[in-house]
Image 1 (tube, one colour):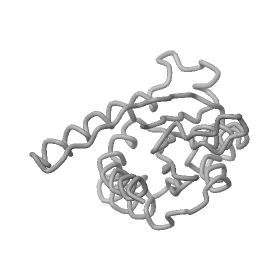
Image 2 (spheres, one colour):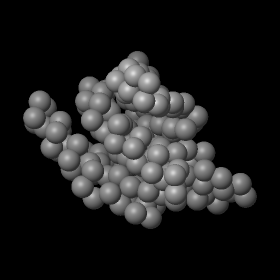
Image 3 (cartoon, helix red, strand yellow):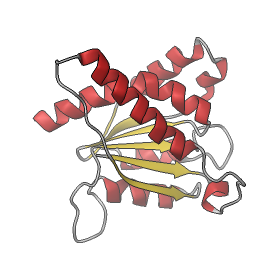
Image 4 (tube, one colour):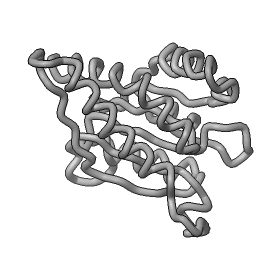
Length: 177
């Protein structure tokens, strides 16, 4: 069960003529990577995934935190069951003063995976040096994995290829415990 959260002032205010492109890039990349994982496993078990919730919020720490908590079952609602096993955010990971996704994410994480996004950034930097400028973070909010991706659709595709197989492995570990 996957949630996709686009963090963008402009997308939240419908200021793009094309609409949000990074959220759909996450969904398309997810479908592609899951297909590749299943093709490679040939009889060794398959991975299934479904996007159960999507949203667009502005670059506001409180909006981001509220959504992450709600989707991970740690919100203020009476029904605090987790909606998602994995939440992927896209956008707000750069150096603009409005880029606050990592700070909002860190504020809700119970356990941070300090090396994960650094390693992903390093791997991506081999072909796209600007990947080193992404400040994304990852970790657990309750039993839900949360990972921050860049807002660029091209960056999303590159990161998902490297990151998602690791998130699947981590999600299986969490579910097994």
